[in-house]
Image 1 (cartoon, one colour):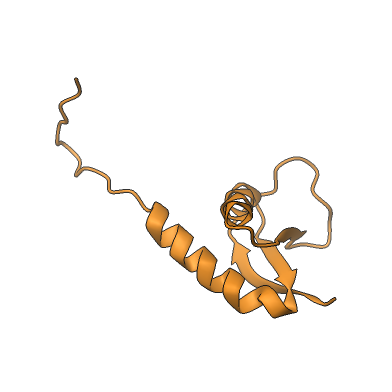
Image 2 (image 1 turned 135 degrees about the vertical axis):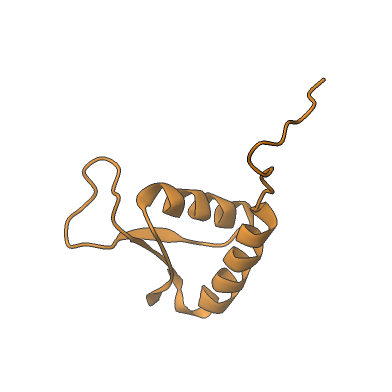
Length: 84
């Protein structure tokens, strides 16, 4: 089974969040370091997300959808919210 990179996260924390979203959608995904070194702590380097080649298109589409659905709106600076 050939695994291919279908997305690249800007850093390890983002990659792990994306991987978790995909796992919740029952999509197989693993992380690959973006550099030649293994992870020694949390990496600030880009991290590739890989999946079996036959699942790459589904994984890419699902990730795009999940990320767009998880976007939150942020109030404009200077506005106040009312919390009960």
